Length: 544
Image 1 (spheres, rainbow, N blue to C red):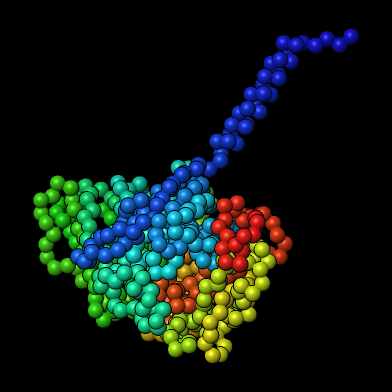
Image 2 (cartoon, helix red, strand yellow):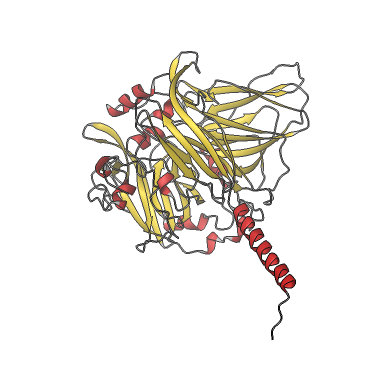
C-alpha cells in the first residue's frame, strides 16, 4: 500500500505555484515601460524675429514639447494633423531598430492627411543621449514643428559623470521671416533660398537659463536649422563635452564648439564664476555675413546684468573646425545604453565588405536648380518605398539609377535606391567638391566618422583613419573641397534615408534610400508592417 502525505504534497504544490507566480510577475515587470502621448499639430502666429509670421505648433508650443524618455521605453505617440497639408515627423537619430516603418519619412510612411491622425509606436532601443524630431514633409521644418528628445540611461547603467543639477535643451538654428510655403515655391521655381534672416534659440532670438553658483548643468545643444552651421560658446565658462548623438566621449574641455546642421552635442558647464549674468552665444560659421543670437546664463540671485563685448567666435576658419572634429573621441571604457563598454566593439579591425563613394553637386535639370548624389537627383514617389516592397508593386523606385561611385554621366532625376545586404560593413566616402560645408545624415544607424581630409580622397587617405576610438554619431559634416569617411555596420534591416541634412538640398534631390535586406524574410530581422499603417498612392485600397 502506498501512503500519501497530503499536507506535505499541499506545501510542495503551493511552493511550485508561488515560484510560477513570481516568475510570471518578473516577466511582466521586465517588459519595458510604455509612455503615451497625444500631439496635435496646428498653425499659429509668432514673431520670433519681430515680424508676425505663421509657425507650426505642437500642442500649442513652438518649439514642440520635449520628449524625456529612458532607454528602451515604448513610445506610443498619437499625432493629429490639423494643417492644410499632409505632414510627418521624423525622429532624428532614433535608430528604429528593425522598424523603419516608424521612421516618418516619405520613403517609409504615407504622410498624415489634413484632419487625420497616425499613431507612432517605437523604442529608443539601446540608445542614450540628446536627439531631435522635426517635420520631414515639404518645407514644414522652416516653420517649426521641431523639438528635443532626451533619452536617459536606465538606473542600473552608470554614466561617466555626476548627475547635473539640471538639464537644458537648446534648439538652435537659422530662421527665415518668409512663410514655409513661399520658401517651397522658391525652390520649386528653381531659385535658391536667400540668406537666413536670423538665428533662433528655442524659438526666440534669445533666452535666459538660470542656475546656482557652484553647480554643474547639462546643456544639450542641437542644430535644427535648415542650412547653416553655428559656433556655440558661453562667456567666461569652459564646456566639458560628454556626449555626442548617443556616444559618451572623451571629456575634453572647449571654449567653443561647432555644431553643423542636424547634429547634437551635450556639454557640462560648471557655474564657477562670480555671481552675475553671462552671454550665451551662437553665431553662424562659414558665412560672409555673420548672424548672432545672444542668450543669457543667469546666476540665481544675481542683480548684475551681462557686460562687456559679446565673445567673438570663429568665422571662416575651416581648418580650425576640421581639427576640432578630430578631437571628438569615443570613451572606450564607458558604457552607453548597455552594460558592455563602448570600446568592446573593435570596428577598426573589421575589413569593409564594400566601399561607396558619394559625390554631391549642384546642377540644372529641365531648366531648374537641383542637387545630386553621384549625378542622380532624388524625387519622391507617389507610394512609400516600404509599401511598394510589401505589396510587390513594381516601378515605384529604381535600384539601378544610383551607382556606388560617381560615373560622370549626365545628371538626371530618379527615385533612387541603393541595395546592401544585412550585416555588410560599409566604408562610405563623402566627397565634397563644392565650396560649401555639407552635412550628411543616415536614418536607422549611427556610424564611425573615421577620417576627415581636404582635397580628393584616395587610397592613401586610409592611412589617416582613426581605427581605434572614433565616436559614433548619426550626422557627419564634410568641409568645402574636402572629404569625410564613415564606417557603418549594417545590422538594422529596413529602408533607410541617406540625405543631406541641409533641407533645401534634401528637398531638391540630395538624398536616396539605402535598402538593407536579407532575402530570407524573418521577424528576427525586421518587424512586420504595423496594423495601423496608412496606405496611399498605388497602395491605396489594398488590405494588410
